[in-house]
Structures are given as structure tokens and as C-alpha cells.
Image 1 (cartoon, rainbow, N blue to C red):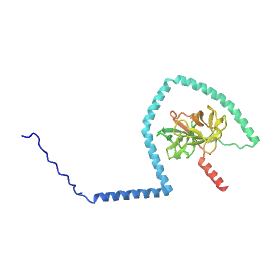
Image 2: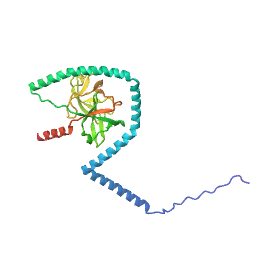
Image 3: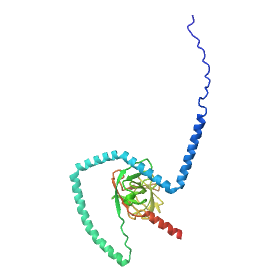
Image 4: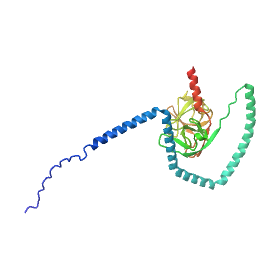
Length: 297
């Protein structure tokens, strides 16, 4: 009696015929036509700029509110913890603010006399008086970071009279500029973003340069007149070139100089600010006048 049973090899499976022979080609043709139609529609919308800008604006506002709603609980939790800490140290904060108030009162009296004297000197020297620009205070909705791009979403837009490219500051210094303005929400491009370029000047060596963001918290100075004259620790201010940022706004200090690469540490604490100020300048009008003057030459 044999203990081993020989198994027969199964025959090769024969391919079955497709019960729906016409379905696959039809699906391919429909997919191809759909992709071609989407491409043509996108090209037409892109060429028709007013219609394209309107769609882009609506998409920006919709995504902005979604981002703000997603990050809002985390920001409220951080604000609650911060308020608890402030409440615990309320007495020390009151004493500090009282001392600061007395100092500001004394400085205000001194500046009043200097302002009057400055006006008289300007009249004698026939120097035109430049009107100070106003500002708008706006609350930060969210601060999403995605590696290289750094921006804030703020709760202000066209309804508040702000415009694209207007500078954004806080009491410490320059934050950035308005990159996109919606009806109720706007996006602020920070000075350390990879697309940010700000004309600046160093306070001690008086070297003009461009502050270029690279996605890190220490932007670099490029197009410097003489790198050897710049000293570590000197202040960096806006130069007023370009027509967006007024001259003299504090930006940061020279943090390190390595292999002719100069890095600047901004004054603004980006992770802790909750409100920003938008300067009511008109950079778009300035650029139009400048381009018209250049074309006339």
C-alpha cells in the first residue's frame, strides 16, 4: 500500500472573455476629453483676468477662514494660559506700567517743545512738511508655517480701507507687508519669508542693502555696498527705498557674519504677537507714478 498520493497538475487557466468589451475604451476616451476640457477652461479663465481674479479671491477667502477655524482652538488655549500667567503677576505688571507711564509723560513734554521748534525751522528753511501716515490695528487670526513660507492671516480687508503691499509693523519693529487683501481677511508676508525683500540700511556703517528672507528666523543681507564695514551688533533700519516701507523703521540687529554672509536677528517676536498695525500708505499709487515717470523719460 502506497503512502504517497500523486496529485495531478491542474490545467492552465484560460483567459475569460471581457463581458463588457466596450467599457474600457469608452472610459479612457471620456477621461481624456475631460482632462482636455479642464485644460482649455483653465487657459480661458487665465486669459480672462477679471474673471480669474474674482475666482482666485473667493478661493483665498474660503481657505483663509478654514485655516483660521482649524487653528483657532489652539490659539485660544495659548491665550488662556497667557492670561493666567498675567493675572498671577498682575501687581508687578501694574508697578512696571506705572513707571513706564511716568517716563512717557516726561518724554512727551520734551518732544512737544522739539516738535514746535522743528516746525519753526522747517518754515524758515522752506522744507515741506510730510504728513504722517495713519494706521489700522488688526488682530491675527492664524499663523500657519509650512517650512519656507511664513505668513499671518489678519481680520481686516477691503472693508477697512487697507491695500495690497502696505507695511505691517508692531512696537518692536517691522513685521512684513500685505501680500493679499480680501474683503474681510488679509495675508501678511513676514520679513523672513523666502519671497520677502526689504531695502534696509545699517545704522553705524551706513551700508545700504536688501534684507532677503530665506525661510529661517535669521534673514540675510544681500547686495551690500561694503561687507567689511558692517559690524556685528549694529542696528538695521528700513532705508525708504522702493516706496513701500518708510525710512527709519527698526528691523533687527546684525547677529552673525560668516564668510561674507550677514544674518540679521529681527526685533519682532513672531511667535507671541497677537495684534499688528498696518500703515496707511499707498505703495501701489507710488509704483504707478514711478513707472509713468520712467516711461516718460
